[in-house]
Length: 122
Image: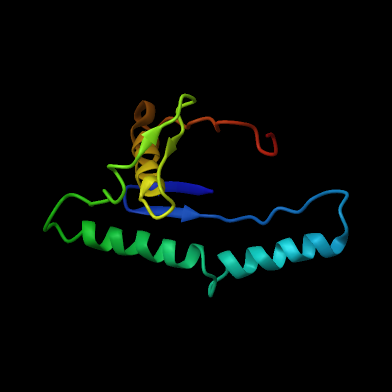
């Protein structure tokens, strides 16, 4: 969960999911996988969050007001359902995060946005 707090501060929460009605060992394996990928020494979130922090520092330098996140822009396409798709190494996700961040920061002069779907629904 990415929760913008202000123009210069965002909180990121990550929650492991466990399955009902499956063997305990399966949920334990899922939990260990979550820890390995998203934990402090993981291969997933720590480096992404580091890049978000470095972007914030760079943007506060006032040298260039823009953040270049164009990798893969030439390959990006929009599916009929509106989903934006690119190669796994492209910056589609980063562009989406910033697009949504702008929407959150400018929505109805700060009025709370409603979640896209209820928690726990598919």
